Structure formats: structure tokens, C-alpha cells
Length: 271
Length: 268
Image (cartoon, rainbow over all chains, first blue to last red; front, side, top):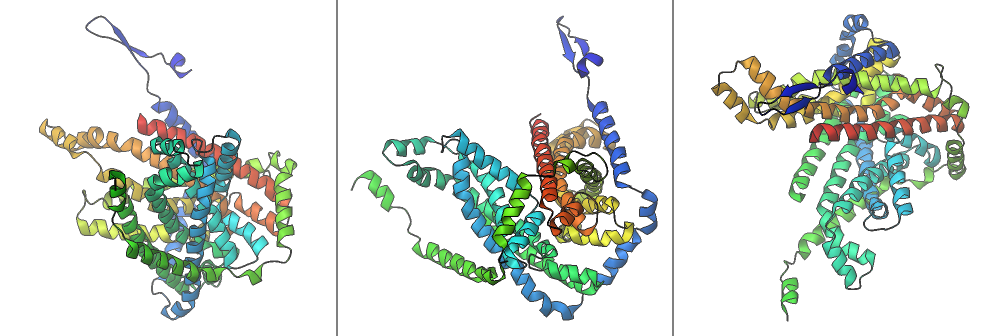
């Protein structure tokens, strides 16, 4: 279509042949992006003047946070531990549950299109569901508290690790799997002994990475009542007690930093 | 004892290592299992779960197919706009920060400080930014745009830095040797190496921002989150179902197309 409106440039080579150089599509893409930006500004009431007038309000709040309220540290401790426990348990169970689902979704292990498709669709729908929405639904079923948060994190981990795992299974070398099957092992046994050792390091590393992200996510789950440090954050901002909010954020940053460093060390060792 | 058995028994025995590791993991599970407090479960939890499922299966079709300001289509469009504009602003803001934290461009202490700042920016939850920015702009999608822009900076800059540190400097050296000016070196030596990688990172982040934007409504920063929250809190599961269906379909479409574009960008 585009080539018809702007015909490709012809270049005559010294040996008499002609080469067609397609016209660049950059202007078209730029125009589309420009239209997108203008439309988005319309839809979102983007207002530069307001931003210039009032941007310092944001830093007023940060300024109030800067000497954090050290006295609130003991109150932060239990919710913080809850947050870590939630993400730990959710990630552990989620990555364990991901193995059978990924097994069903891998087309080279389970040779049934129906089961493959069901498992894959299940994983992608679960993955698109935002964690916060999952947590909200979980609070309706499991009541307010950490259990709902654990369930939300479990679902997210299941979907994320499950997807990466089945891709790894599908890319794994099938030689030893076939050899073991020909020796008379069942498919599950052959999977356990031939495929699983191949994907194990990657699987552990993905699970650790997911755990890192989950600590971050679970910090906001309390906002919808799913336990953890989010509830304190919500209260602090609601009461405009920014010094306490600063304390919570500081503790959170340090925790995430420590967990990230430890897990990065192990992930480097694994892969 | 044949060769195979010999090889089998020659494997190093690390019972202690595996033993301590297992004990550690079991201890961690036991410690974290205390979050499972079954006493709090709602008595009618399963009936609620049933009605949620029923609501999702029988969505409010009227809401799904109306095109005024309350319809799902408009809310999705607003969510896309928030994510799109936020991604563009964020990715522009992230470029200088990324160059400032690349250790092959600036001195080590500067790079280290910028990295620390980026970790701070990345760790503060999106909803907190949302609540802070509502003070600046008032409730509405504008606050959502600014929030998305701020939260994308952290991850974008981190991924940009990886690309910048992988720059092939031999190209720059050969350009110096044939007498290129600094501007020419940047235009023809650096930009072509980084452009497609940056673009692919931006598209990836747009994908993530769409999910973020869909929950920002919970704090009043526009998008589809607020109607979803209201519908759920009022137990109008049909409405919640139609919103969720719209959201899931949109995210799936965007994910598929973004994967395709990124594959094309990376592989040329």
C-alpha cells in the first residue's frame, strides 16, 4: 500500500542492474505518533500550564517526608514482615504450581492440542489480570487480610513463571527424553529425568526474579485491604502524616534493595 | 562395575549442601505460613466466588457496547491514552538519567549516585505517586499520565543503561580516526546503535504501563480502575465482568502486537 503511493527509488548499478530502495516509513510513523500524542492529550486533559504552575506541590510533599518519623519504626515492623511473608509464600507455592500447568502447556510433552490450548489460554488470561484486581477479588472471597494478598501473588507468580517455564520446556533438547522413553519410562518419568534437569537453573532463576518483583507489588496490595504495608501507606497518606509515609518508604526501599542484591547473587550463580 | 556405573558413583556427593538448603527452605515456608489465617475467611466466600464467576460469564453487554463516556470502550481509550502519553514522557525523561548512570560515560561516583536515585524511584509504589500527584493536578486522568511517566523512569533507565554499556566503542574510534566531528559521531556512531533497542524497550514498557494504568483509577487518577472498583464494591458483578473482559482483551491484543513489533525491531 505504502509502496504504491511512494514508489521505491531505483538505483542503477555500474553493471547495468537496477536495485529498488524502499522509501523510508519514518515520516508515516512519526505522523501516527504525533496524532496519538494529540489525541491522548485531549483524552487526558493534559495541561502544561497547570503543570508549570503547580509542579512544586509534589516536592512540598517530598520535603515533608525527608526527616522520616523514626518513632513510627516499631509500627512498621509487623506489616513489613507480613508483606515479605506474603510474597515469599505466594511465590513459593505459585512457582511450584506452575510446573504441572507448564507441563500441560508444553506441546512437545503433552501431545494434545486441546490440553495445550486450554493451559496456554488459562495462563495468558491469568497474566493479564492486574495483581491489584486479583487481590481485590480475593478479599471478597477470603476476607480482608494477608491470605487474600498471598492468593493474589500466588496467581500472578503461577501465570508469570508458568509462561516462561513452558517456553523453556518447548525449547529444551528432546534427545535424552526420547532415549528414556524408548527404554520404557513413562512420559512423566522421562520428563522428570531428562527435561527437568535442563530447565532447573532457569526455572529457579525466574522464580527468584518473580519473588523480587512480588515484594515490590505486595507493598501496595494492602491498599485494597489485602494485608501488608500498603494499609499503613494508605492511612499515612490519608492523614497527611507524610513523615511516617517517608519512614515506610525508606524501610521498603532498604528491604527491596537487600532482597534484590541477595537474589541477584544467586541468580548469577545459577545461570 | 562397568563404565556407566563408575561414572554414576563418581558424582560428587553433596548431602550436607542439599540438606542445609532443604532445611532452610522448609524453615522459610514455616515462617511465612503464619500469614495463612483461615479464621478470617468469609462464611459465604464460595457463594461470592460463584456470583463473581457468574457475573464474568454473563457480562453487562449494554455497558460493553455503548460508546458514550460511561461505556467500556471510552474507558479503555482513556486508559490507553494515559499509558501512551505517560510512556512517551517517561521515556524522554529516562534518557538523561540513563546516560548519567552509565559507568562507561560518567565517573563512577556519579553513576553510583544516579543508580541509587533510580532504585528509590523504582521502589516507591505507583499508588503512592498517584496520591501525591493528585495534589498537583487534582483528580482525573492527567494525574494518571504524570504517575505513569514517573514510575516508568526507573525501569526504563535501568534497561537503557544496559544498552548504553553494551555500546561498541570501536566504531567511535574508527570515526575519530577518519576525522568525524562530535556531532557526527553521535548521529552516525551512537544513535543507530541505541535507537532500535530503546524503541523496543519503550514498547515493552508501554505494555506494562497499560496494566499499571488500569489500576490507577483506584486512587482517582483516571482510567478504567475506578468504575471497576465501584462495580465490585457495589457487588454489581455483571458490570465488573464486562469491564474485566474488555481489559483482558485489550491487554492481550496489545501484548501480541507489541511482541511482534519488538521481534521485528530486534531482528531487523
